[in-house]
Image 1: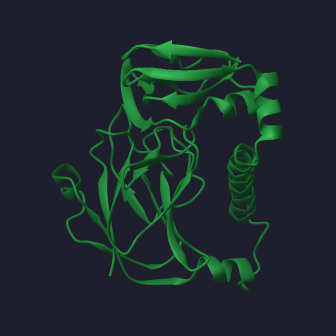
Image 2: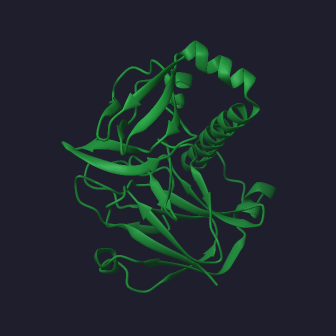
Length: 260
């Protein structure tokens, strides 16, 4: 384990680099960015007390995003062996990692179930217990366009009605169908900010949540970034108005989810 200092603007690691270790942020903040047709898109900001790069180490895959110091940063660097020892000795770190892996496993299970349904191997018309839970009604919950650009695509707030409710991009020529058929289909042009299945609003344990569907550029819920590049893929919604941004900090896909 070694302590490292980064000046504002300095790169901790780049998208595509080998996952050779994990950074534990002690002070300062870092930006999570991805390259999109030659431009860097800011996906969100991560602060002190969080881990950076742990999923790449666990999955033994290259870095999926670039991490850039947004201020003066102090961080501890742990190689893979040191990181696994830290997980073994820290219940909090272990719990967060287990939650993240469990969520990914659940998403994989959802994909398998939906693939079965699309292939025609699941024709049972009876609704099972899981389906009943996921089809709970969300009365007085509305999704609206918050940015002027998005308001040109839909001007009237959409009542979510039965949940889950999926938001995604309309496929372009040459693209196959998405995993889930979106309930709200929006247009986008390359370079795409919105994924074909981008985020879902769902009811879980009596509360409303937004879950990022492994989108390319992530989702921001009430200023908290979620998605494949962050600690969690899920964020709870609060009573009143919630802001949801799909596709990075400066994306035009800015939504309002109102819970009356």
